[in-house]
Image (tube, rainbow, N blue to C red; front, side, top):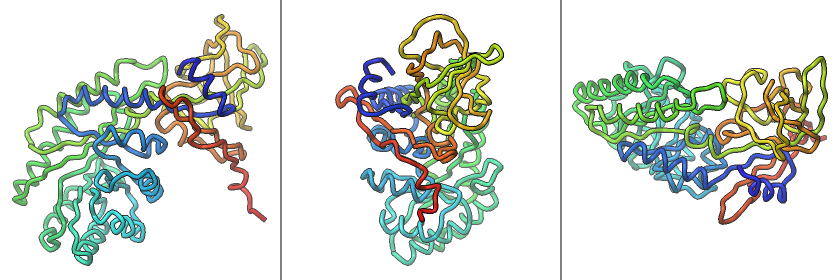
Length: 391
């Protein structure tokens, strides 16, 4: 975020607000695609930031959705059914049936349980339409199925001629800070795919892999780990002996860099030797993965930057001692009315906060491109109406 962007944003909204730079999003996606060198397709996880769906969908091969609400967002944005991957541990039959009918079975659908498979098979048989499914292999938690359950589905698959099992879906978690994990996981998946193909005399055409490429939010972290993990991921994909198409699913690595959260300094004071800066935002509106009571230092910009090495505890507007955005961070000689811009907030940060706590307004959401400038995507809506009975 630069000062020209900030000035444009302040014309359309007061603080606090989220800014999503769509030009930066495009550059980051282009960089990921370049690193993968055509070895894999790219799927964007909508849960990381639904406000980016419209801009991202033109640049990726698929988008993954995990709820009925995310499905509605994608339909409203006009995404074609062929681009959707319907995932999620819970798929209510009424919602799934609606999505299957509206998409005419043209999307890709993940299977998390035998019950979900039966819903798909029943719909395909009743409608006479084919379906393309990915069987989700569990990584040892509530998501997906173990190999024994997957084998049971493959055994009964011939009973449903409209069902096409494309392959497997696997995701073991986000923020993987060890490049070596890709050799372990993709090596396991390589062997698993080949073993199932041999056992059932079939060929899997697809593997969807949630890579969990990390993002460095704090100054204390290794700033080269993202690139190291992305390189290790691409190298391991190239070593796989199973022959099919791999789709790498990313959310955080795609979206984080394009986002900035901007909040205003409303008060300053020094208490028992600690400089406190009170801002009009807080932890209900921004969350950094790994942050605890502001002990780590996120990347920030201050406008105007007055210089100096004065350290601050930046605290939000909530009635809790936990509302600390950063602590002991050098931010210069802050004054009332100054702006603090928190970087790398394009993924999850705006969605994982306690947005309803104390009934503060939701921050405005602004989209930016050099061509169109700053445009409001969502106004600063009140939450007190949600938290009240309405009587």
